[in-house]
Length: 418
Picture 1 (cartoon, one colour):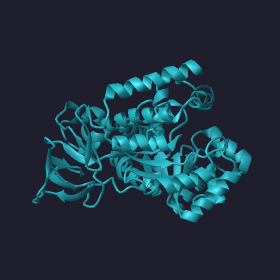
Picture 2 (picture 1 turned 180 degrees about the vertical axis):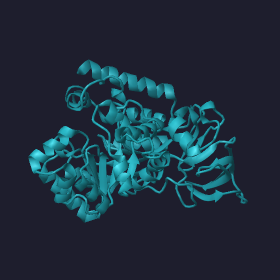
Picture 3 (picture 1 turned 30 degrees about the vertical axis):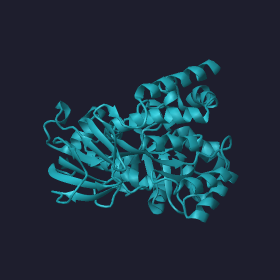
Picture 4 (picture 1 turned 180 degrees about the horizontal axis):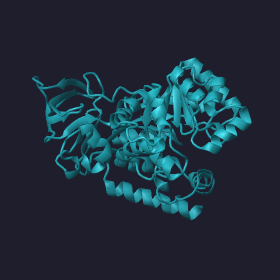
């Protein structure tokens, strides 16, 4: 099956007309004009054709906690609101709640997510039933999951479906004992695999780690041997010079979550310093309980303007750097072959409607996307060569009303039990 996208502009520093051709789930042509045959034609109507956003950190099924656990610091938010409700979740809940997240991802031009949560089999079923791309991250800690399960998931989900892959991971230093971390380090050594975790999200987290181990979370993870084959951290708000040197030397990725960090008053990640050092940066929404929207446009905008505020320098962190982090940066962090419109890459593609007030005039398309763009501009979202969303319509093998109804049914049940 070949699909041609025509009458659009290909994302670059300037607007240039171009066409794409997709065969099955891959781009086979990206250029000025495709001369070959095709089975299906998509008219971009003068829109911008660009890679889909890679949401490099999220907890999709936490849609059930949207706007019911707000205005609290992180420790109280977790212990008083999140953990008691999460304890009531079932695998079937995860399935339905994750599909609601997919709908929101698609409307925001997000074509893949890096998800850390419970019941991975049910999550995988939700993703494949919708046709959405997901990378799962292990969530081992002292209270749930295990290193044995982590290895089982790693072997079962990698290669199971072209839409699904799995990375070694654990929740965080403050929830995971050193013996478990050492066992995960052995798995990383066994499979030559990267490892990911929440890291340096709050000042108290870092201070606690220093009290327990005499070093920051990043230095501690390095000492245990977790980073011998790469990986990275989610949040990375409180990073020392030593931490950033470890990230640079190990090729680790810092995944920033500006909306969540701002909403929980956790702080502002030092993206400028990391960018200047050549550290890989990716962008994630975090879960809808701490954000509360799964909106990459909002994340990009905050990532840029908060750096300007943090440094007192209006020239800090140009829009192009954050857009790159939200596209190819996320793809590289997640280990998926997307993020650029090149032949051979996955056909995870978005069309942006430029014929809207906030996209005109087009003085600088990259700046428009980051500073004035919004999810209302997303006209079409394609994953693996398949259109899953187009101008308000979803093509994910179920009706939106059924998904909404199920999510509300789940939250009513859980709220009555807590």
